[in-house]
Each structure stands twice: as C-alpha cells, then as structure tokens.
Image (cartoon, rainbow, N blue to C red):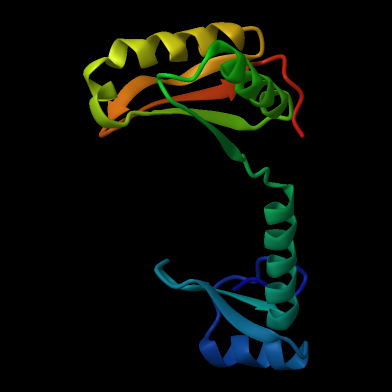
Length: 157
C-alpha cells in the first residue's frame, strides 16, 4: 500500500488500508491489480482524474496538425498555368503544409503518362529548394499523384 503522502506503507490487510483511507478522508485506489500482492494507493481520485484530463488537453493542444493542400493539373495544362499552381504550392510549403500534386487524365490522355511524369518532375525541380518529394509520382487509376513535404529549412506555421 502507498500512503496519502506517497510513502510506501508496506503490505497491510484490506481492512487496515480502508481505515487509513477513511482517516485521511481520501479514496483507496487499486493501481496495480496484477502485482502479487496487489498495490493500492490512498489518493483523491476525483483530483487525480481532473489532473490527468488536464494533462491530456495540454498534450492535444501542443500537437501540430499537418495540413495537406492539393494542386490539380492536366497533361494539357500550359506552362504559365502550371507556374501559377507552383507559386501557390511554394507558399503552402513555406507555411509548413504538405502539397499533393495530382494530374488527371481524361479520355485517351492516359495513353501518354510520360507527359504527366515530365510535368511532375518539372514541378518537383521548381520546388526542390524548399521541398522534398515524400511520395514519388505514381499512377492510381486515371490520376498520377506526387506528394511534396517541406524541407528542413522551412519554418512551421
């Protein structure tokens, strides 16, 4: 048994443990039921639950949620429009977000995936100073997909 001040009282009977908890006006909580003999602690259980919930809230608040933005282009997208999309992607990467680049194929465009691959490589090259390719270009159905993540020298939002 562990006492109300955190000191180890030792092995005592259940009745003795309940009496100590009642005298201290605290709760008797079993903290290690599988131990031999089981370990109990005298504590304010309501306060313990409140403190644990408070720590969990703080931990959740400290977590950073990584946002994933997406730019969509087609194999026929001209260079000027692609540069506009790359400029948006650069801004997002500088803010610490990941960027998903998707090339959609329509009709017979799927017959020429090398055009889309060249576009994706050009985008990766344009953003190579601030981004790393997290997922290499790959074909998924009628789309080719690549994921870019911010590089080491980029500030987080």
